[in-house]
Image (cartoon, rainbow, N blue to C red; front, side, top):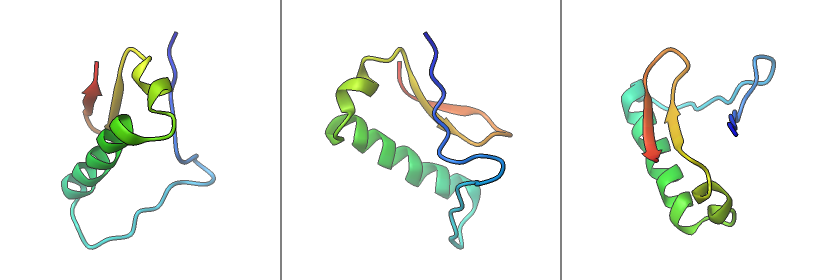
Length: 66
């Protein structure tokens, strides 16, 4: 099974407003998701998946769990 989690949509995109470049933002998001995989309420659900990755639609994905 494959799951795709999108925290935003075309009509309602997630907006992250900060004076940083994309790589700094991706690093922050990666850190947050990694922390959630260890401590989050639904960590068991996510850790039962084959993989978890973060990234931007026009770039490479960073695999956090495989």
